Length: 125
Image 1 (tube, rainbow, N blue to C red):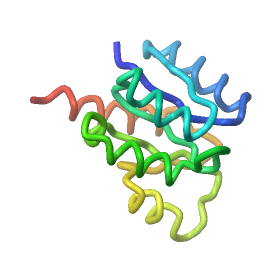
Image 2: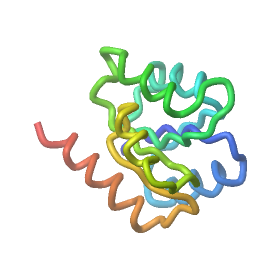
Image 3: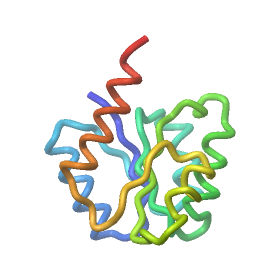
């Protein structure tokens, strides 16, 4: 069972997404701000991170950079989740170290496809 870390400060978004992912068979751990996300990336050793970009304490861009700078987490796939679908936001997320980008509101089938693609890549030695 793959473990997914959701870093999301909005309780409704966190609850909705975690319930849907658990129903699909994933183990889910939750962080409510970027600082907690960085700590949990190390302690929980997730298979993938869903990272909100607009977070308190440490925003998603900075949290992603810190996670990717950790040797144990450098290869950890991170999908940016943001309501900011402005021109340049995808590029900014990718420059911060995110491996993919998805917009809110979440379209679950599309997001599940991205998650599965990363998990499939990780499973191949």
